[in-house]
Length: 211
Image 1 (cartoon, rainbow, N blue to C red):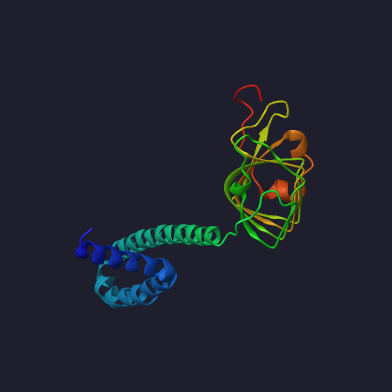
Image 2: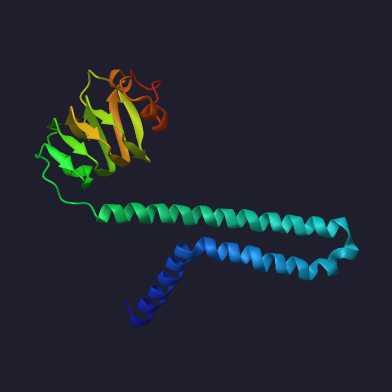
């Protein structure tokens, strides 16, 4: 990469980062002071044209607001991704064979076993458990946990589940799980706390195959 290309890339990244960090402030200032000031300035000029002119102003204002909301949505998404990436960077290395993990930020993918041997009777207390990962927590117990961008898939209990991080009888106490897809049989789903059932969506569809 040439020297000028590096400067151009750095400059572009600086402006993008600035917009992401200060997007709402810039947006409010632009719409508040600038927008209202401009309307006050042109109100006398368009008054002779009556309702049609004001209708046009309303339409333009509506389009500007829609565009601003779209930009705000992009900013919120970028901010969420940045926060999630920051949490992932801060995760601690763990020994998957340790039975107790307390007050740690952990990548659940570290518990993956190439032959799908489940980690048994693990206990997590007040941990941040990071995905993205497919977690099959057979007989798992969740107590006072938070679930951020998580989901549940109902699976059969008479079929092997592969391509997952398998755990058997884990306990999660006051943990936060981020972007974890939980796979479990229907019987286990019925034992979950009611707040967890209401807060974590089920995305499986039993109309396909013989589920």
